[in-house]
Length: 543
Image (cartoon, rainbow, N blue to C red; front, side, top):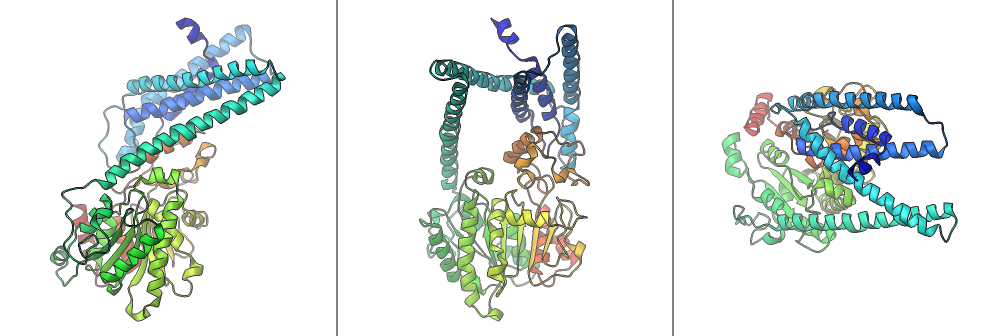
């Protein structure tokens, strides 16, 4: 029986499976541990097998000539040797390829990427997927035979395809996906509600969540609480800067603070007014990530640069990680960012122009996707804000995409140069903001992005088209061995998404404080900061 089962596999399908398996071993944007590599290779193997089976079915359906006899046998042997040699070479190179990424990200090299373990995991996982697909094929044959008793043969096949497709969509999308989302929702909701005894409720009456605050402490999620109470305090700022400073203002409205998005935005405005946020010199409307997190590297560096004379207001819209939220409801961040900005901007406009803070936008990851929609020039034309800083913009970001596509022709897609740089500039690991010189217009916007960030450079078109970021000059953190393979590269970069923050700061989806410092200096133009002062601040955050 075992022999009969093995003989039931398609030779062409197995050849394609081997090719896809081998291609999946090539490097992508981020390094992978052997277990993840095995799962990825198993998926690629199963898809390759399916493509091979479909290809041979289509060939026969079109009644094209097939090789027979000695010629067919020789063709099989040649194909077998070729695909096995291909797989062996790729397995042999696996460790080298993984280390080529790790080297660029300043990670310790691997002694081995465990290619034999990867093979085992891939065969088991891929085999399970193939078995499931064959079971579905068996269901097709069974249903087709019964329907063909009552309707014409071709009609039977169409009906069978429609029925099984519908059931598959219902099961995968309506049952499995919904169950997975429900589990994720419950898990991350509990994490968001965790009471951390190390994060005490603030007693300062001007802090969000204090007894005097309009926002109750219990309604603020875990990430929001960390943002509210985190350093630097006035004492820390004074000690480092050696000058008079003030406590930074931080306002954060949790997802459970009120029932609706509009109510949360109005609450944020009232709290900001209560704590004197509009009396500061710098006011930032910050959109958090999907979990509600605001990067301390972005927040604290700004507060140091302006001696605490800052106010940052933010509003939670989700507790799911950005890579999940972006698949489930990417518009949630846009709607939340717009609601908060509209409330803040409407009040800010009523203040005397010579007696109000400079107004900026900020967002990381899904927060950048949401925040950038507030840069509506038609709305801001009469009374413009001063600028914004966005980091790690996700691939569905519309304005980022438009600017990237409209970049100057001599600039790479991973570090675009947009027109004369007077309004918008990009930077990466190395500060490239000053490439345009000191010429800025009335509004200053900066994008921070890394060439190795899958959240930024993933796209569905990877399935069938080579991306622009693999053409011409590559980013400094991208492996020179990375190449594009149809379908496989799509799977690889999609697999990178959940691990986008698993690499050191300054790579992937992890932004470094040094990048933020350079960007905030360019955007907010703080006074009395020499180059040596800036380097000293970078050193403090690097420690």
